Image 1: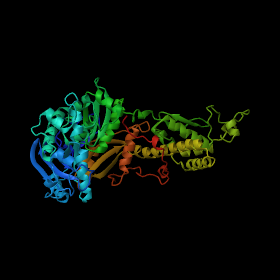
Image 2 (image 1 turned 180 degrees about the vertical axis):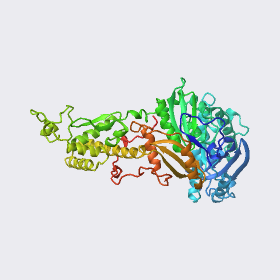
Image 3 (image 1 turned 90 degrees about the horizontal axis):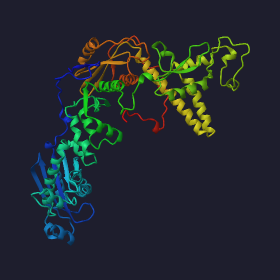
Image 4 (image 1 turned 30 degrees about the vertical axis):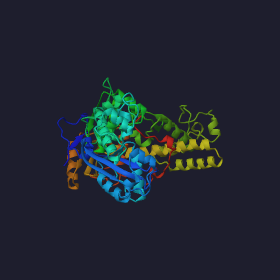
Length: 583
């Protein structure tokens, strides 16, 4: 049975907490990696089935050579004189040698197929290219191992002030290998293995200590950034939230991952391509983290931290309490208005919250046109004045003109229905309008109408999701995961605690314990006031995912309406749908 974590003000895991780490979480230490350094001699032709004349390879683990592989190969063709001059290999030497069809399976057996193996070559494109071409011609599967090119590695570790070029012979002289390259496969492989160990020794102080680091070490990364990869040391290898801290103790950036240690290390490698985030990493002086029991808990803590710290390098989830809503004004003849605060009692009769003021304005324009509700801001009396006159919108049939009729029926009632989330009539009218605009080839106007309709559907869907969870005092649920069951307790749309069970038989008991020991949440006065909007949306998505089971029976039904706005699908253009929380 796993422990639990209460989501309150204590942001750090208790000191002294021991975490059992899986070997897969730690990564593969370079001292445990099997390096297969290979070199080929060929006839000089393009890669194919009958081009290789010699294969030499050295196997090393932890800097020690543990095996070698060497053989001549009969290419079934004469060796060109120029190749003989370069390598010393003659046609007579390879005449009795085995063919590639015999050699390659034996070499692949020498290499193995372990994920902790790295195939190394000096100019790997040449050697590995020939090996792959021969394997393909013979219909042999190529070993699923990582490939490393010592030419590229040398360009990152040995400066041009130290070597005039990056040929194997030159580099061997510069670093003083015990075996000199001779253009024979095994000698060249031995020299390349010594070169590899020399370069790994230089990369150690730069934070390159695991096999995973080698995947990006040959890419261009500033030295001052790579050398600071030790900021990730000591971080948990579990789900959690990490925070990059600046020189003035300011939280610069907040993120989450299923493995905090691995994710943070990536920021100091070429895997991080974003210049703005690179700037943030260079400014950071340390990284702190909070370990969580579940991935969901980590995602929730990330949202809360972004709201608390307002980090400058996070672009989303900021100031959710200021999101706009669309309501009817409280006056004799109401009109639509955009407001920034809303009480819980007003939630049912309001639409939102919108992600931006622009989205709220788009929906306001759509509803005003489809319902003909008044748009003027004049404070109209309940009974029209005797000398009241209609405005131009009423004359064009675009306003219900309560200033003349004195009636609240029709437009106001229809608008109120839409604000409560029943948007079918508004969608139907907007679609008819879109069709007419397209037939008239008014494509720009049609695009604007499409944006209004998409904003309406998204807002109504969000309202339904939020209203469902924010009305429930307590909801307990569980969901199967790889190592058991995740269990959560949600109160008024806020995650109050989570835990994990290793067996389905423990689920109900743990849920009861979690419910009894997590702090209560009072019904908020403000709409969506118990938690950030994004948190409640995240919980809704989790609760309605396949496999989730409710563990209690709330007074409110936990189900969406058959008239849910989710029935309407509306895709935005790709450039409008950026969802990353990162800059």
